[in-house]
Length: 334
Image 1 (cartoon, rainbow, N blue to C red):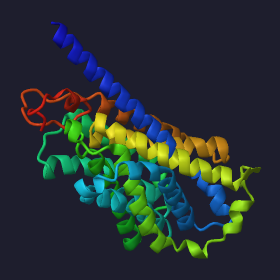
Image 2 (cartoon, rainbow, N blue to C red; image 1 turned 90 degrees about the horizontal axis):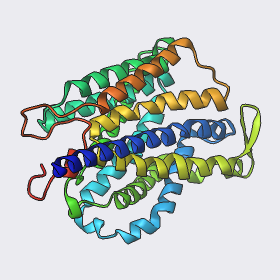
Image 3 (spheres, rainbow, N blue to C red; image 1 turned 90 degrees about the vertical axis):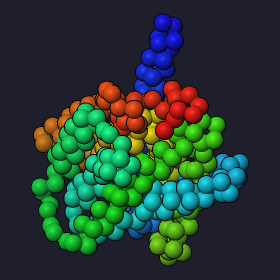
Image 4 (cartoon, rainbow, N blue to C red; image 1 turned 30 degrees about the vertical axis):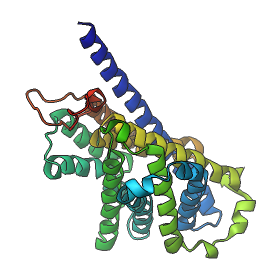
């Protein structure tokens, strides 16, 4: 009897911590827009802001890359994939899409990623998924459509939509690669090392794409207006690098390790809600009634997905919100 109580407690605790980390990651990622927009309005190109974000975070994480340099030998494919997809791919595809289609449409297409993750788990990995996880994805995507008010600016541009879909696919790579090795015990690749090298790879790729040598560096020496209030550009950049990138990626990867890729993906949809609320408070961009309702639907979807339980009678791994991998004994982990 004591054993059953301990397992239940560990499962609940691990799931709760994972959900908290996922929420913190969504808050951190969601805060990037309100800090980046004033910099862009002050004269920086969007791709240059992305490069500063990733390169700055890579510099901060460089000591961890040196500490975990053994990953270069043991998991080179994982590091390259994380850098290309989870860092450079998402950012480059999303900003390229913004140049061709409305922001709301691009954001909605990108956040189809949770549904794509569910499809990956079910049809590629051939693992069963719970009904609650599927319902949570549907609710989250529907609510997200209201948050970004997708109906206010629909314009069909095939290349723009493909780029946004590319961002969604790269975001799938973020959640799937973040889960790699989560059930390998002591042999699991250290998540901080993966993030550090992923940022280094991403910074290298974005350097070629963004060409930072053509950037107007003088903008960083001045200030940017945030809803009429001048804020030092370096303060905004520090927020983007330290909070919206370093903290966001670290908590995001750790949450996937404790939850599952598709559940963490649904909770990540809260980023759009948080970004909209912060824009309302800090930038004066007011919320409409549909956006408020949509935010509530996204929250509901995230709650439904994270509260899902494994399907009964299945001996194979189940894509749900549980922390089951933490309870596996050596030799029984899938």
